[in-house]
Amino acid sequence: MRTRDTNKEEIVKQKTIEMIVKHGIEGFAMNRLAKECGISVATLYIYYADKEDLIKKVGTELGTYFFKSSLKDFSPDMPFAEGLAKQWENRSSFMMENTDKISCWEILQNSNYGEYIVNESLIELKEIMTKFLHGAIERKEIVPVSKEVFWSIAYGPLYNLLRFHEKGKGLGGSSPFKLTAEIQKEALSLVIKALKP
Image (cartoon, rainbow, N blue to C red; front, side, top):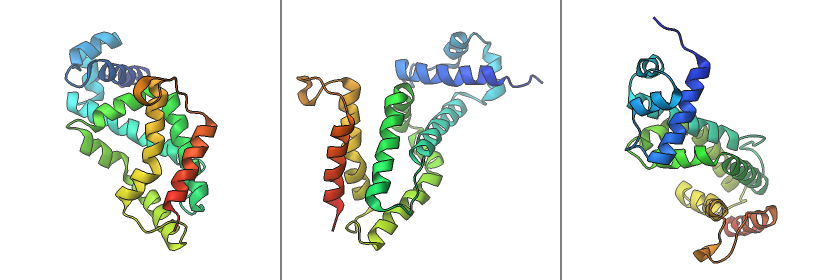
């Protein structure tokens, strides 16, 4: 039996991300991936059972990596405003520095593999963020809201600003846009204000 080569495995993951971003899931094929990696198709099957296994594992790894990075220097016991500011800082930094990974994650999240990948990736984050939300409500730092409403208000504005930043254009595409610390701070203060009792 052939042994695993971690360098080849990392190349396979990176090329998978690149190919999914460029061609979508429909245009992604194991033969093409092997050729892009400069390896035989048989080598791919040392690491993954099949195309579905590869996509699920790469997607879960991407999601886990993203969500773990969002928890850097964060505690669910932080005061709400401080904790949300840290979340915004971590999420925006990650997304600006990993555009290819985020693009791939979004494609996978909206695919047939999405539910599986999100569920596998979010296990730890769900527990931590639920504790953060409930703690903020118990301390009366925010109004009681469902997790869906909370997520929409707490993170929706950040993700929209990041989309403008990625495109480099503001609303309607008429003016240049760059997400700065000042703009992020302005939006965050409005979000915190909206959630306060």
